[in-house]
Image 1 (cartoon, rainbow, N blue to C red):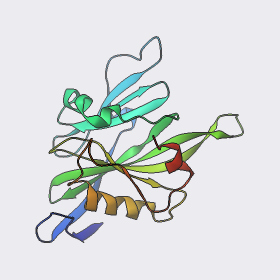
Image 2 (cartoon, rainbow, N blue to C red; image 1 turned 60 degrees about the horizontal axis):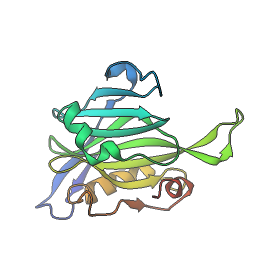
Image 3 (cartoon, rainbow, N blue to C red; image 1 turned 30 degrees about the vertical axis):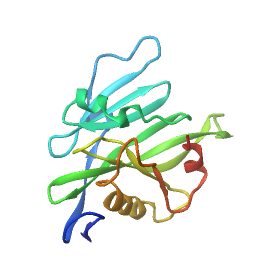
Image 4 (cartoon, rainbow, N blue to C red; image 1 turned 90 degrees about the vertical axis):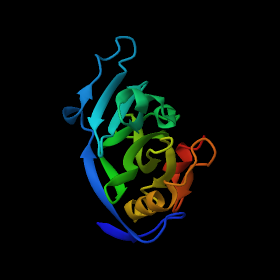
Length: 190
């Protein structure tokens, strides 16, 4: 899907498109073996335009970062952006790009809600979309969209990526909740 428009600070109209990559374990390279003490794992997945997606999992929480290589991705703020509740990510990364240059990713997360249990007595998982800005500059979360509270969650996440990601200042600007706040976005507030 292509959208025409320019975000804040962008000169002229540009075509912004989405493309997709997979972070399913079968499509990624595992780094080492799972940690014997806590079962933590790391994997590197192919991205777009020479970037890779790094996924680290430990204590039933995932973090996702992006960089030109695993080491660079591990140094980004996104590599330390974990949520309090248990969390995991979906296997698809949506890349938002102006021309051939990606500037943001959108990824579905499942956040554990310990206040409600499923039939197996596990916390219910609640879906959320996270928008993450890409280089140049730091890689960090920009916006969250509660999927259950917003029937147009994908559109809202794309608009947030297009409008906010390129000018977002990691460590200075606050991550925004886009659309209606819901149970999931309240779970990830720090």
